[in-house]
Image (tube, rainbow, N blue to C red; front, side):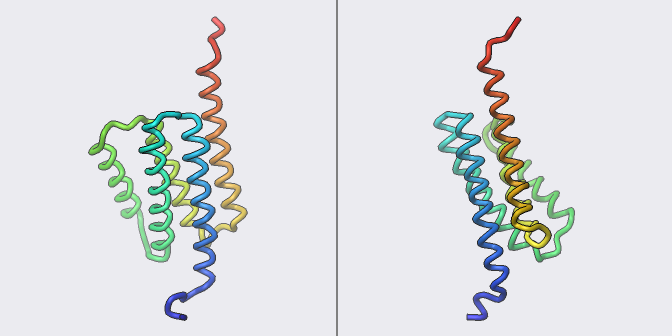
Length: 149
């Protein structure tokens, strides 16, 4: 049994932060992105992509956080996304921005496992959610209101 769970503290920390990350990514994709971008394509394509990319990014960063990584790894990750961006169908800037937000949130959550308390992660994630909601709400409101010219 000791071979399976080398450090029970790491396992509980992984599960706790993983659940926070899943909740935040799901909340952003379902209750912010889909609420303000109602289309069948948004639900079918991007909802799946955001949630699966968030999960994989989190696990990749969390499980590799003990491995010494340098700037080359970060640049390689961004180069990979740039290649994906130019090799796939045209995606709107807003969808790419949400994709970057999901990846960023997942990386922040995963890599802050030793440096931040759970409450700090909740505040950081809550701030991101609040800002995204306010931006979407402001854009929606300004596009609905008739111009006063």
